Each structure stands twice: as structure tokens, then as C-alpha cells.
Image 1 (tube, rainbow, N blue to C red):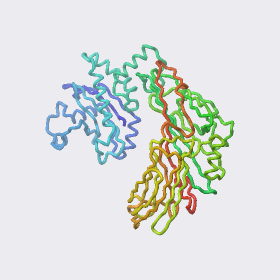
Image 2: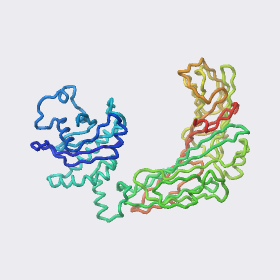
Image 3: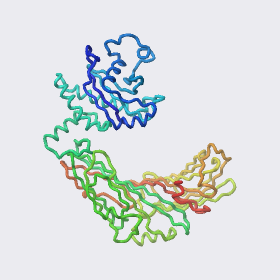
Length: 512
């Protein structure tokens, strides 16, 4: 959503061109994007003089254009949207948003992020609604309190600086230009620190800081002695700092519990001003030992206005021995869960008998994981087969939904595991004749190669134990901000493969 150009035109009869361009602003970076998106249908934005004459002609505001013109005045050309195609140099510039209000024409050219031939529907062009919002904001700014021409000229002279703040690079951030003017005046009076070039404005309002930690867990479980199960946690810390002042300083600290696994492969946002070298040198490629840096991870920063990702990190299984499930759990308990574990351990087995499949699923929630889900489901797809015609099953917990045409079973586990932390599902599925056009196909899941995929989300929890203590957040700005912190764990690529599969499937093969 961006604008290629903006104009304010005073409609004055009797002048040579029928009007005067009071203000214009072009955005060269957006114009380059328009040339790429529009391709062969691209029409460049003209200079002010030709555009003024062409727009007044299209709006029927030229003094010498009173005759009927089929291309402009026919019944099929009635305009109800204030969006026009303006003829310029033998071509047509479209879309142009324009309207007349109190003798002033407000106009802009939104960016269309696709080809213009054929013309896309107006509702699909998000820049049009943004263009209207921008022009209405300029109109409100000019009309508020304006009584004389000198006051109008003063406000027109302020538009250039205001659009730098409210519409940088053609993208509208705030349509309330008066608020932006007030913040600029306030900054000049109080002699605040110089505004950095990368920061397009300042925040004015109630101070608050919001910090959210989201971890996504990937897992590949095979239940095979010769193939080690793998898992990995990928985390992102997202922040939104609404603080007054041009350069507020904030220090955010990530902490881990005593038995937490050190964070690795940390990438930080450019707004972070300094960092302990030990944070950046912890890599998942290197061997981990007890001397590895385990926090707290302090990030001093000067936050931007918008929401931003403070940092990314990983944490993954460090043991490569071929342990079975029971040994894996005992190992974890012995070392006080020094490394993260798959939150749900699974076993999946498929046996084929003619047109039927017999399946067995066992799932166990690890005792160290919070037993409170926003949702938890197991999706069991069956590829390269006909539609499901009959299902007989027994579930120790939850409900089973059957999507026959999609050859898919969805085991809805719900929001909690039972007290035993273990659940099971067994059943027999019968399939009909194959229909290659309708039934799902997969090049990997052939024969006994099959998988179960878990989908879940746990709020107020992270697998690494990573958290932000509200009292550790330091804010150097006016006012006492409200500090809010959130955590959640989400499954991403969480697969449990058929233990009877003839050959193991690795995560890398899924990406081919």
C-alpha cells in the first residue's frame, strides 16, 4: 500500500490552465516499484503542468471544454467512485483518486501491485483506500481553523515536513496530520534529542512495552534403534515499545531457569546498541559443554515505532546416541532436563491388509511440559489411496473426525492429556477405488511410508523455559510504562513416522 504521487490543486477559473498546483510530492522509490509491477502497462507520472490540464479536462473543469465528448461524457462513462483514468501523452494514467472540495482538488496516484491490463477490480487495490485516507487527512488539516489565505499558505508550507513523518516513502502511517504537527512543535519547544533519520516519527500517548516470546518446535520421530529422533526449537522475541521521545533507551533481558538449555544461533535486530560477545558466539554447530553461556541475555536497544523482532534463537537436542524412548526420558530426568525434549513422544504403526489399513498410535506428554493446550490435534493422512469408505476405531481419549474425500483422520485431543499423560488410538480403515484427480498424492508416502503430524499450541509456556521478567525490563524515557509479557509454544513440522516403514524419511527429504 503506497502512493506514487500526491497533488493539491486550486481550481481557479480565468487562469491560463484553469487552476494552480499548490503542492505536489512524488515518491521515486514507489515509481520504480510501479514500473516493475505494471510491466508493459506501466504509464509514468507526468509533470505538474500536463497532469493539471489532463485532470481538469477529465473533471470537466476547463473553461474552454464545454462541448460533449463521447469518451468522457457518455452515459457509459458516469463516474461514481472519484477514481479516474487521466489521458496523458496518448496513454491513460490509472487509477487516479481525485475529488473537489471547497475549491481545492485533492488527487493522488496509488500503487497497483500487478499489471493494469486488464484492469484489476478496485476492491483488490489496497492503495486506493489508503489514498482516500491520506487525502481526507490532508483535507481535514487544511480546513481545521483556516479562515484566511495566509493561514492556508502557512499550512501548505508545512505539508512537506508533515508528509515526511506521516507518509514516508509513500506509505501512510498516520492520517492525522495535526497530531504530527503538534508532536513536531512539542519536540522543538522542549529541545529533545535529534531525531534519527531511520525513525520517521515519535510516539505520543500512554507509555507501554509489550514483549512476546514465540517458540516453534520441529520434530522427527521414527521409533527405530538405528535412527535417532531429532527435534529443534526456533524462537523469536517480538517487541512493541510505545514510548515518548525521539531516542528512548530500553534494556530487555531474557532469562532461563536453572535447568534451562542455552540459547544458540542468536540473531538480533539492528536497533540493539551493544551485546555481550558470548551471546553471539553460541552456535548449534559447536559441541555444547557446561561452560556455555546460559544467560541472562541482555539487549540494550533504541526501539523503532513499529513492532519488531528483537531476536531469533534456536535450541535443539544435543545427544546423538541411539536411545529408545524410555532411556531418553531417564536421561533427561537424570540431567535435570538440561536439553529440551519433544513435548509429545509418539509411536505410529501402520499395517496393510488388502484394501484395509490397521493403525496404532500412542502419544505421551512429557512430564516436564505444561499440560494445558489452546488446542491439540493429530492429523493422519493417507496418500495414494482411494477415499475412506469405512472406519472402525477405539480412542482412549479425545474424538476422531473422518474426512473421507481427503483420506484424512483428525484426532482431536483437546486441551489436556489425562492424568496418566498417555493416550492411544487404534483402528481399521477401509478405502474405495482410487481416483487420481480427487485423492491426495504424495511422492514420499508410498507403500508403508506414512506419517502422523501433530498440531498444538501452549500459551504462557516455552520449551526452553525462556522468559522475560517484567521487573528486569529497564526503560529510560519519560513516564512509567506498562510492561506486558507473553509466551507460547507452537508445533511446526512435528512428524511421527510409521515405525514399520521400509526406509526412514529424513526432514531434508521433505524439502525436495
